[in-house]
Length: 353
Ligand SMILES: [Zn+2]
Image (cartoon, rainbow, N blue to C red):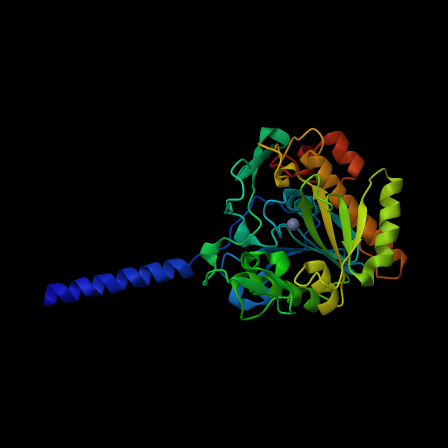
């Protein structure tokens, strides 16, 4: 009897340890080296405490100029395989020196898709490296479009209906850009979306960006999507970009785009909301063994340059139209990145800006 009791106790202990193991998952950490412009670092869970300690929590970087102006929010990594957005956000954290208003930057918007390959293709990397000053290889992850299902407590439904009635395929319940504006008591992915909405509201964000990539022949490649509230500014921005030799398409955020950031952030918060798209060969189904870093037509540094140029052009345009300004120095232009690549714009142990 005693032995049975011990065995049962051991079994119960194992179940307990496994359960604790599940709940003890922590957010992925990344090689980000904040520059002098960063005045504070928080967590997404500061806006929704149940995210604390989960794989859905992620770092929030504040760059406050101390000079009156507006607040801009820049988010990369909604989709973990769309690395130009993540790298553009990282360059802002490492290099931007704000001169009016403040920037809030989240490089890994959905941190719960970054350690996972969703199986749609096996010829893309799980990480990549960029050599910076001093020969240091900095490593960054290449994740997937959707949240790792191991982090969700329920299987995907047959059909997913967003909080505002949009209908999507079941697996899209793990796609951060289908679950906005999120739910405080929803799935992990819906709670991430909810926390972002709370951040936008509580920080009184004026202009919000969600940085993405698309396949090279997708209609969305090299596109700026604008909520109707920001369409005037988007038109100005497109003209500004064109004058710089950067050709970007413009697409309106339509009513039927329920669950997408540009639509729901614009509808549910005070922010003007924009979504950027560059052309990643890793998202083209017809390109086998894509080179997501050094592709001759769409290399990563060119895509990052376009992302940063779109953010800059929209912020200049919104300021022109009366939104409190957000300005910063220290960030490379598109021409700088085309000329120099990414390496000189990422921090190394030997040199801070
Ligand atoms: Zn995307």
